Image (cartoon, rainbow, N blue to C red; front, side):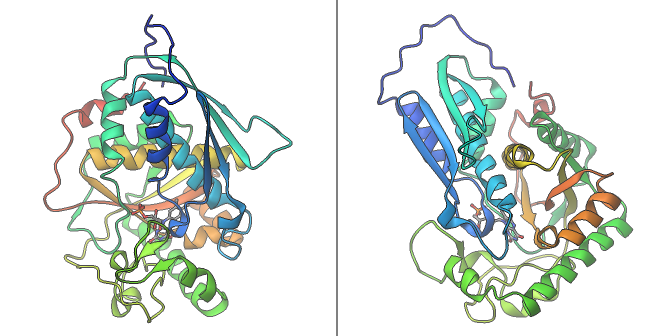
Length: 332
Ligand SMILES: Cc1cc2nc3c(=O)[nH]c(=O)nc-3n(C[C@H](O)[C@H](O)[C@H](O)COP(=O)(O)O)c2cc1C
């Protein structure tokens, strides 16, 4: 997106509240297991986005792919907040080859009038939350699907909804295979325990017990959820309905660090656009943590692209679209 630059002079003080708000908003991005595995720093008019090595999941994410996707989502949130606050962000991704942990530098280079789409995305930051369990309603209208695909394309990724029931079942089968293998083989007990927050435990790290389905429902769904509770912390999801939602794959043409960062930006743009349109998103990334399954999904379901996220998109019963949602298909 290229915001319309205005002729207003650039005179932001070191204590610029818009930059402070952008860092705070970045912390609200989605992340693998709620690890928030980024480091968001501020130096004058510049915000840095880097990885936090202590928050990488060694078992689930040994190559840090999902960590960088999470950081990309935080980066997009920072960018949107700066734009909505009337700043013109200039982004340098992977600016220093000697510091691979430094993913991006965002400089508030001047002033620019926010577009309606910037405002809409910004309003969605606090509304977006990961959905788990079934959806009351599918997303089956062409306009919504096209709008979300455009959001992914604007950040250099492809969002591919699976329309054919047989393909959906194939993908669900791969999710189930990975999930049940992980339950048997992975010594993820410690990793999950660190990032699951029991009922009433305060803080913003990790997955809250209220957010995952109770144990008796974990194994039943077409797309099985990650077993965050492991039968011990009881989830409290209030389940209703039995619609799996619209399954979709987010992929990129390449598979380097910069592509994972782009996937994260695209993910967050899709999620914020979806939230504005009354669409919630669920994730099932388990098979993408198995190299052979990931390659298979890329070859058979992504036309040779590299799958980065598996989503289900659906509507809540009382959801309403943002009035600007219809125009979000053309974000530039
Ligand atoms: C790269 C990535 C992978 C994720 N994979 C899953 C997943 O497989 N299952 C799931 O329930 N949530 C998944 N999530 C969602 C996170 O658990 C969620 O973002 C986090 O708990 C914070 O909650 P929030 O999104 O509601 O703010 C994933 C998020 C990211 C960024």
